Image (cartoon, rainbow, N blue to C red; front, side):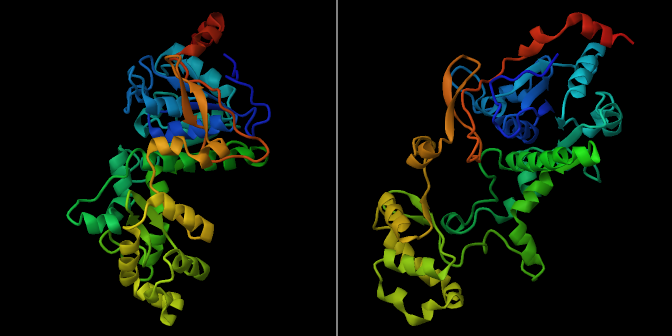
Length: 396
């Protein structure tokens, strides 16, 4: 089995980088997805029944997983059971040709699967082995499992949500889980940056083992709240909010507004029509504005409720006021900004249908990311295997 590209990627940043991905979690799969978007050749090693993510909701009308489609587009699929001699031979051949291994195999299963970090390093000394587990692969919680809701709260975000306007509107609500797979995506993003840092240092240092904890990645999201602990301030969802600004209800929707600089405050005053309360000399002082945040927000909310969200945002952008509408998914897909930047591109689903998929949460000026990739069928690379070579490698 050789790495073969699903589509030309000669000009992409990671052209020539070969990645093996063993994933059952969103975090590890997303790491592979970002590497594939940048041009790496990513091969998923899947069990015979396929990755559990193939059945993960939300599902499309034909039963295909929308989540898996997004995470797997642009990758290849190879069925591999490392607990069998044949599967172990397939896995070792793949790793021998790889630059990076993305792996979320639980610690207790690694030795049997031939994925103990020390053993991997002995066989492939130039390989970057990136472990992506809920609580990392070392320490007291290394053997713990964790779903999205566990990791979100273990990272502290649950303690801080809902806050601001949401907390005021629904004060009796319990801690919330952010929609979707926020923790998984944070863990995957962290794994990618670690993988690339280690890979680029291979010429000087050789291969490395990188231990990524999704909980740690989530903790970094709340870094500012953690920093305030040093000041003796423990933030909570009932007290955490912008001094003024935040989420506002308009005549026909919601928007978020935040003015951190004096020039932005001056532009906000202009947006509001220079009302008498906003032109008070004392409010030129940002500290005074912070002290009177609740009062200021009361005035802003009363004004917002009388105007349409699109009109507010358009005028705010003209004046330099940081404001944005909370949009529906359809509005995001059809947005003028998103179309201009080419954020979405057609991809081929397993069913053969075409769907617009987010290329990546970033772009490159000189090497634009490409669409036109597809979601791999389970075990599609089987025909590329050499039966005689595989059987020979599987022989003790």
